[in-house]
Image (cartoon, rainbow, N blue to C red; front, side, top):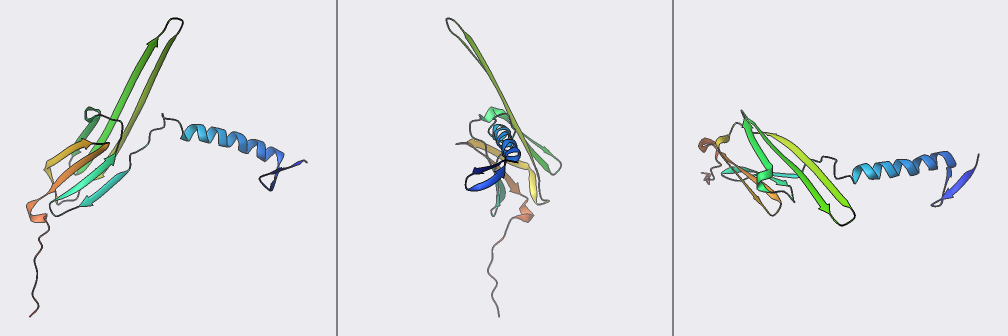
Length: 144
């Protein structure tokens, strides 16, 4: 058995050989644009509404579809690009496809009839109003 010194460690030759291929393939998979990833989400509540912010740069507002079914809000996007370049001696054709989908369960206090969405600077903001009886009411209570 031969030992190989690598990064101040000793490793058996066979596992080192396998680690090289494992890292090559895992890097190729994680760096691949075709791997569908869910966008990062911020969810917060203010006095009058619930707000969902999705980080989805590089898309257009026409790429999004938002659907409310009972108390389940679904957001998805699908982008297909097809680019062809023809030059004197060659033709190059590239296509790209990406998509994502996220679902959110809305609380009973959410007003499903009053939902708005805006896409600006790569952030999709969904504003879900609260029902009137569920809006936070601030009042000071005097202790007697």
